Length: 267
Image (tube, rainbow, N blue to C red; front, side, top):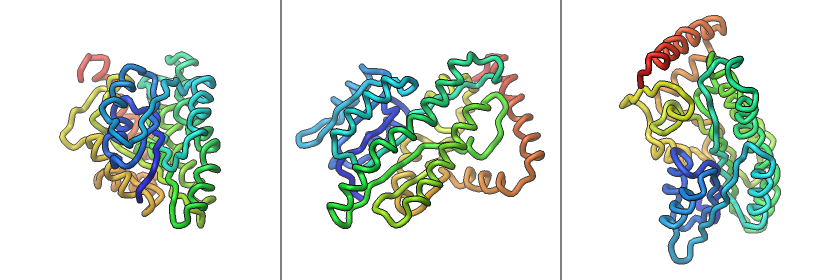
């Protein structure tokens, strides 16, 4: 499916930047993130004659940033919305400041809901007018949506929200000209580990942002949930079959090991 104009949140690095680079040159871009210089540099690099590329520097943890982005996006014929921006902190719930816990909920949950609610009516109307065209919504969740992970309690809860939101929305919109996808990458080569405080496994088995994006774009319109990587898909399926106490015990052991690595200063 070809799209005319895509809005990508969290576009300055990682998966968001990879989306901006991997979308066809015929697709215009509205890029947003908190780092205005990096946004501007990316937009300059990707711009070419006849292609609409612009940026909105916005912090989606605040209402002002969300509303500024919605106001600009509402004036554009967006037909692909990629809710990618996300925050995560690897720290026990009671040791993390309440403001940072709230930021995760604002960015990971509230921003996708409000952006999708604001833009989807126009996206559907334009798709219907053009006959045979479809709009697209991608919500970047995570394989963390399938696990209870101590030390990432709020983060995993927000990603479970994203997964459920996308699946439920897809069900509501069945039969109308829009495709909705919950994209669930596992550990990915990006700066998420450094920002969150997680020890970086630096494994060759980790996906690249490019792989995540390519799989996501290929899955859009073909399924509602896509877990990136065969091993991750197998593990995600297993979590739905395993007894919850067993799953919780395994998660506690894993997160304790990661916590020891972080305290030891390991990567």
